[in-house]
Length: 391
Image (tube, rainbow, N blue to C red; front, side, top):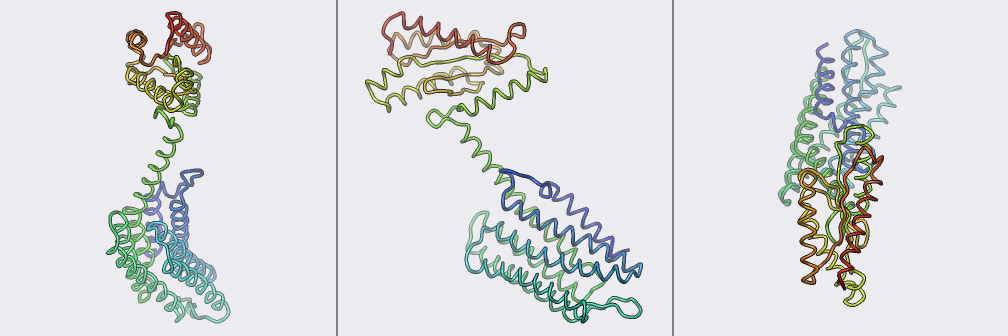
């Protein structure tokens, strides 16, 4: 039972430490690093399971079942080696001829193990059970473990050598891979001389914890940051830096969802439209028109600092009022209008705006609120135009 208990404990610890990594994900979050590392962990869990069952079956002297489980044990062992090599390559970002050599070595070990296990069904060369139902380790087992130990030592040597030539996080990653390789090689060596001790399982557990703590977690966080940056770029207007129409549509979905759940306290909408953009484009060119749009965007953002600003068209902007902007909406709108009146007189950028607030007594959706705000914006626009020529 001692042997079986080590495998069970290894399964539990590996599952707890790598709970997030074991969880299957789809879409953008499923990076190649995470996918391959998950395959490696699943192969290890299969090995731990077969290893713990081996101890149980052997104690019960169920020879036939123990024989089958031993075959599975060696198979899952070398399968984890294949996934380990591929995971390490992805962790470190290694490329080149030596990388292909390590990949070949991993698959060679797997195929070699499968061949000798197949032969063992007819001619015992890996393991056998004597007349007293006692397990016997045979020469091919030692050869297979020695080849594995050599691979881990070679990968550790390569990792330490490459770390000297690397800088920053890459250097740290290579050193971590080197230490994990040394750990695995040491425990494989112990397993060779003590076949009735679960040293291989312990080595896998320790090496995996090192990889997870110092590489995988950092890689996973880095991937999340990259996805967040990509999402942010997708929802940002390239000219002004405010949120774009795609972000606006997503925000409307959230508003409607909150309203359906009856957890919304109300909101306000301000609609903006630039006066005179076409004239600027026609007389001064589109480059001047772009500067005109950016000036208008900056003006809106300066007044509505606590709410998302969206550019939903060439010269159209929308603000969905939140927090302090919603609480102080009347005073902010009044200040904005005074600034626009001043800009009109001084010949600076002029932006018409209209505001409306959600009213559960008359509004069934966001559309009604937007229409009222848009109508007020149009009224403001007509008022400004009635004063004379506007830029």
